[in-house]
Image (cartoon, rainbow, N blue to C red; front, side, top):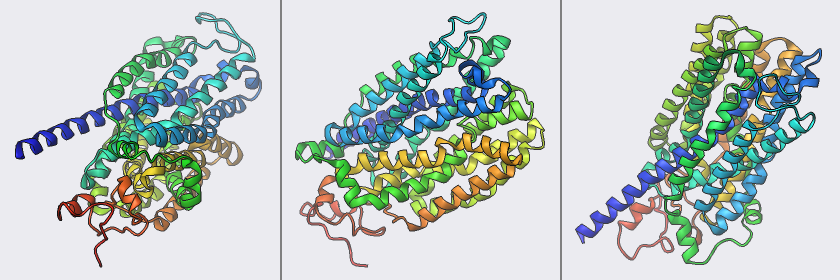
Length: 483
């Protein structure tokens, strides 16, 4: 019996390692693709694809370029609805593979897309008005993919996890964002240094085309993992929700809204760097070297990754709500610090400001996955997680670079942007205060069927704890301990 248990423990541990690899590699590829575009939107895409708008008003062309970043967010809910619906009906794993392939294909095609007028020395001629139209279409595909990707990744990680390590398992797919940002920033910094003046001619295409290699790696890794044990249970019982979206909004609509609000502060602040705004502001307004700015963003991404990793352990120790109080309280300070330091015009101060700014981004991004997952019962979890995240991304990050650009043009004061980010952070703090902290709640479908999902509270026995009470204790007959 001991040998059997030990063998099973080893198998479970090995599968968890594969899951960690699959979600980290896959989300890194997804977000590399996304960040390459967002950065290029701030650096080169405005004159290449929106050439007529640059005549006499380059700022307007930049706004149009950033709008293509934001418009893709509007299609994230569609991706979330589709992935959530089919993820709750046919499984988590198929959605992981499909969203990865869709993002990779769209990114590669952007790298092959002719520009508005063509540029001497480029590989392609001009397409005229068809160029920005096709660019927008490919951005829509990226938005659909991003909307469906995140939910599947965090469910695969957390539903394979032991209860007491759920926060750190949920943290791993979150690492894909700073890792993707690291990879994208490093690639763009290298390409700008190597191609020189040719960067704005054809060099900008290389980071987009490189994504095809990453997608192949991500596909191989994701295809090898097992389906989530929670979905396997649902499938074995043949109890997939017939209309998970309708059930979600009927029973958990308020939770979806609050979780979206929880994400606004992190996403709005994060898109100052990941959305390309600081890259544009530092190079075009402050006149800093592009390669140096990209290396500064690279350093910030590394700090973001470190504190995202740390936050997974913090949230397992102190719970979800306290984790966000800590992170967002710090962010209420750093939103002022970043622009104060950048506006000195000193490259070293920009570097330091970005690094400091990244600390609360990591502290609030790492634990967001597990709080989303623990809020919804198994039958609608994919839908709830995906849609809540997509709505938060729209409200927080979709047009953050565009809003920041407009605020600067209107008020000519960077503290107008700081005020905007401060308000977004306060909204998320209020949402954190209103949401229920469900740290450690059982995630199984049978526990949902017991009718005790809504009454569970932190301090009640976890699934592992009540199973240890004896073979007769099951999800269905377990009653939370009296307090």
